[in-house]
Structure formats: structure tokens, C-alpha cells
Image 1 (cartoon, each protein chain N blue to C red):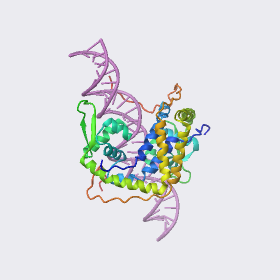
Image 2: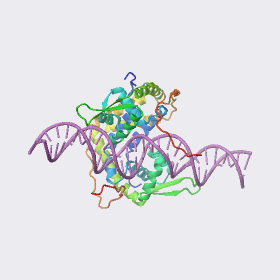
Image 3: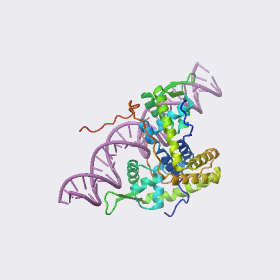
Image 4: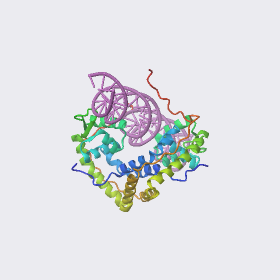
Length: 168
Length: 168
DNA sequence: CATTGATCGTTAACATGTTAAGTTGTCAAG
DNA sequence: CTTGACAACTTAACATGTTAACGATCAATG
């Protein structure tokens, strides 16, 4: 109360808009039994072909530990294939399996149509403005941003997590 | 491959920018042992005072089932208080507990400073442009958007979830 | 070749997202 | 008063987000 932030919550605003946008696409994706993340992976692979796993993580904005599970499940149901890199056995290469390609073929046109309907309804200039502003940020956001200094915590305010660790 | 979508992935773009922005604030929040969602709740309560739970869910973009757990944990560690509505016993009213107020008082100025540093680094016009574009969408996004027709699924493509249900 | 340190992916543990179903409280029609 | 529809919240079940730590592999170095 006494301490308002006088700036609006930008991450929250981005979240709200994202939800507003994606709400129009979720029915399509879930109609095919896909999760949001699975569709992101399929779409990326459909555009770029075979990718290294870390590249998928980066492109799809999915953290490595999450992606491990996501890809395991997708491989299990035959959406994607995974194989080891020829020379560097640490890396994993991911690509669409036949069923995955098929789904991309079927979902893509629906998504395209829905974009059309969305732009038509909310106004093409509004959507274009979004793209512009987001792109500008992604460029400008490359610069280093200093971090505010954090005060020491004499009293641990909220323990929150008491992690278990192996005895040894 | 054959089926590209020729539009860029707008929800993903929003996600990337959001991550880009929030990455500068996550250290602050986690320094105080808070999760992203917990801070969203604290900030909202700090601005609006006591709120109904569904209002919190709406404001903070947290689905009701998630919020149930979030608030339970926050109540447990003394960040918030919950009480039943006087007349309508279904509703729950949420407000800051003393420890919650204290944390808001300490986090708010750091967040404010970090906004300052961020705007300075990436350019105030870029941030302002973001706010503008997002606001425009939130207004325009109110209009009804027609949904693309979904084809029947003769072959269930990906079973995905075999839900267990009570026998009966 | 053996050591050391870095990289890539995974597992572990907990918090949250998402959908369906269950619980309890409200309200109005019968 | 009772029944039934609805509203707010919770529970259940699974998928994902997040951080730390681990295992395997690779790279640089002695």
C-alpha cells in the first residue's frame, strides 16, 4: 500500500496478452491431443528440420530439464525421433517422426486460418504493432543490463524449501 | 517443411520477451525466497488490499486450481491471510499478513530500481512502445474472435492421456 | 596417458499449469 | 421446505517450470 511500484507489471502484462492470444489457438492444439509445448516443438522441427536438443530448448523457450520429459513422451507416442550426434556423443539430434509430420501438416493450415481470423477481428495494425514492439525489444534487450544490488538477509524471511540431499 | 505457417509464432514471441524482461527481476524475487507467482500475488495484494480469491486469480493470471495451492503455501509461511466472506461462505477473502507486508516493503523499491536500470539500458522508448502495443491489444482483444472449424478426428492421433476415473 | 574442467543431457524434488470432477454454499422455482 | 441449477473453491492426475546435483562425454593440459 505505502509502497506501490508506480510502474505497471510488465511481465504480467506480457503474460495476459499471451494468454489472450493463445486462447484462440489452444482449442486447435488440444483438439489433436497436443500440449502447448509439444506443438511448439513440432512447429519448430517442421520449420527447421533436424535440430540439436539444446537448440530446440532455446528456440521453444523450454528449459532443458522440462524438455527431457517432453521429448521422451513425444518419442514414446511416435511424434519425434531422437538420435545421438555422430562424433559428439553428448549431443542429441531431434527430428519429426512420420506421425509428427502428419500432425504438423494438419494443424498448420488451421493455425494459419486462426491467425487470419484473429487479425481480422482485433485489427491488423494492432497485431503488426505487437510484432514491431516485441521485435524492437528483442533487439534492444541484447545489451547488458546492470543488476540492482541485493541487501543481505540477516533474517531468512521465508525458508521456503528445505532441500534434501544425499547423505555423504 | 512443406507446410510453414508464414506467420511468426506470436505467443512464443511474447514468451521470449517476457522471459527477457523477467530475467532481470528473478534474482530479486528469489533472493527473498519467493516464486514468481507468489510475488505476483503479494504485489497485487499490496496494491489493492484485500481481494476475493477469484479476483486474485484473474489479476495475477493464475488458474484457480493452481492458486489454491499457492495460497495454501503462502498462508502456511505467514505471507497472507485468508478468511471467509461474511455473508457468502463460498467466497474467500485474501489479504497480506504482516510478514507479507514487510516483504513487499522491501522488494518493491528494488523492483522499482531494476525497472529504472532496464529502461535506461534498453531505451525508454522501447519499453514505452511495448506498453503501448500491449495495451492496444488488451483493448482490441475484447472483441469476439470467431474460431476456425475443427475437422473430425476419425483416427485418434495421439491418445496422450488415459484418464483414470472412479469406478462406478 | 592421466587429470582436470567444461559441456550436454538427465534425474530429483518441489512448485505450478491444465483439465476434469468433486464439495460445499447460494438461490430460486416448485 | 425441498429440489435442482449454479457459483466458488478444492482435489485429483498428469504435464511442465525451476533449481540443484549427477553421469557421461569431450577438451585442454600436464
